[in-house]
Amino acid sequence: MTADTTPAPPAPPEEAAGGTLLAARGLAKSFGPTTALQSASFDIDPGELVAVMGSSGSGKTTLLHCLAGITRPDHGWILYQGRDLAAMSESERSGLRRGEFGFLFQSGGLVPELSCLENAALPLRLNGTGRKVAHRRAEEWLEHLGVAHTARQQPGEVSGGEYQRVGMARALITDPAILFADEPTGALDSLNEEKVMRLLATSARSSGTAVVLVTHEPRIAAYADREVGVRDGRTRDFAAGAAG
Figure (cartoon, rainbow, N blue to C red):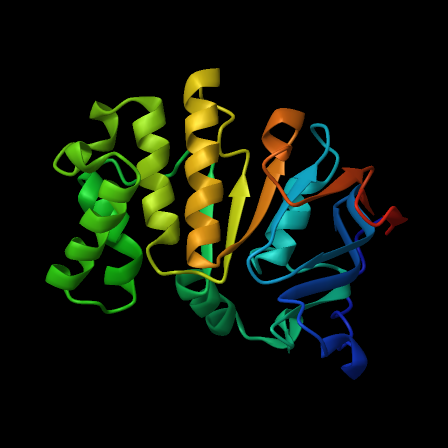
């Protein structure tokens, strides 16, 4: 049986009120016969750090991709600052991902042909910022994250911890409203894991960026303000105790 691809319904007007930065209700997503999400819900406020926890295959990465506008859910709705993501065009969602959303993944995803400085500056350059201004801003972020010495090096020439901090600089350089981080410390040893998470939490909070942090590690989730569990495609907010 194929997934129902009926467009997500518009959110009720009353759900758009209040201080919630991003809200989702009733999200369902299937890939062929495999159900990844079923009636999942999520909320995050400005500046909040929320850990999304679950085992491999639980649906937590699919949830993140739906929230970030990368994947369109089969059912349900997602509001970002009162705007319905399902009603946006692909170019509008791409604009959000370039400017208002930041991304940090386990693999890092740095461009190997570019220097670490050029990688960190890339989001600004793609948004039309001049080279000089973009590089100055990138230098500031690399300095802030303790990896200014990597500026002229290629990504393949730095350590795993340095690589991920360069990726963090790239994710935060546009001052995004939300940073989506999928297992950002999964490839690091315990020492670098702690260092990266401390920097991520303090940097995001100092800039007022909300963070959706996908992890399966309780010690990583401990950096969050709140935890949302995902199991068999359903969500549970541990702070509120409400299943979704």
